[in-house]
Amino acid sequence: METTIVTMGVCAPERQAYAERTAVTLGRPLHLLRYRDLRAAHALPQPRPRTDDDLAVVDLGTDVDLIHAIAARGGVDVEAICVIDARHMIGDLSDEAPLMASAPAGDTRGDVGARARQAALALELATRIVWVNWEQVPTAALAVQMALASHLNPGATLRLTRNPRADLHATLPRAHETEVLERAGWVRALNDEHDPYMRDNRVSTLRYDQVRPFHPARLQTALDRLDNGTAGRLVRSAGFCRVASRPGILARWEHVGSAMWIEPIGTDDGRMGLGQEIAFTGLDLSAPRLRHVLDLAALTDDELAAGPESWVGFDDPLPAWPTVESSIPDASD
Image (cartoon, rainbow, N blue to C red; front, side):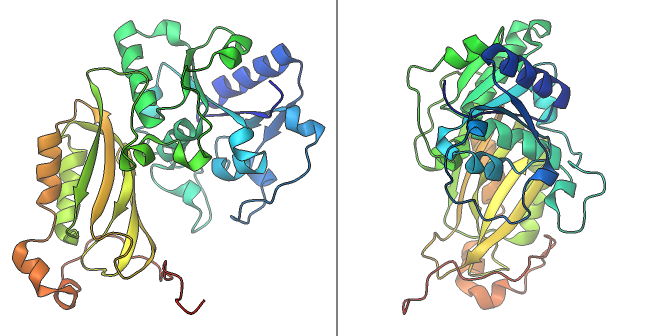
């Protein structure tokens, strides 16, 4: 397999051990990539000539910008392996800890829940997901974990690892070459392409659509109810939403475990959708209860009719947003 292999995951000892075994098994050099090794700019790198380093096994540190690191090594051509410790996979997706205890202001590695966010991202970007220490986990629990991973990344090859060479030669019958950012289950759900390879009765992914913006105060109440398990155990949700008190701004909805981010993408005139498009993945979810809780947060008929001039006066307990730029190109350009 003549391509760069990267390992990622938030369980550092298990990930590093797997990377070392892979490098030894394949007779390749092992490179350790840590956050300080990446340039600070968020722009993705330009294509570069292929070098011997491209055949290395690269272990991506727990707090590395995974998207940037994979793109820098070839994007879709990279074999991206997410290493999961079966003893605490679901716990990792609920971990409220930051990736760094003392991150500078504005550094998202210091966010509450940043470790859970990184755990979810590693699963969603992977071409292969491998479990270590799986022998120590009951079969039923392992089946739930594998189904959950398949819902979070429907195209990934899943392996209960015995040796890295076998892991790398195993491929799903429907192997994909999907763009890196399109592998995530939530993206596939919003594109009506969500078809997990592994399933379990306890695991489901639900799509929520609502043309009306959310009332900010009632949305906060809804989030609290969902976090308390009203609709089942939510593990991951992501998509796009609009908050009525912030009209004309499309926002990214992202949640893992108990951590929640609603962040502005840009301003527009409604051409990017009017309301909510969000995918929810979790355990023992109830679609009717989920929709009921979220629908209660949407604007009523009277509120909708009152228009944006009224909406900006709503009680808004959500975190403030920075100034955002327009997402719609100028027609004169």
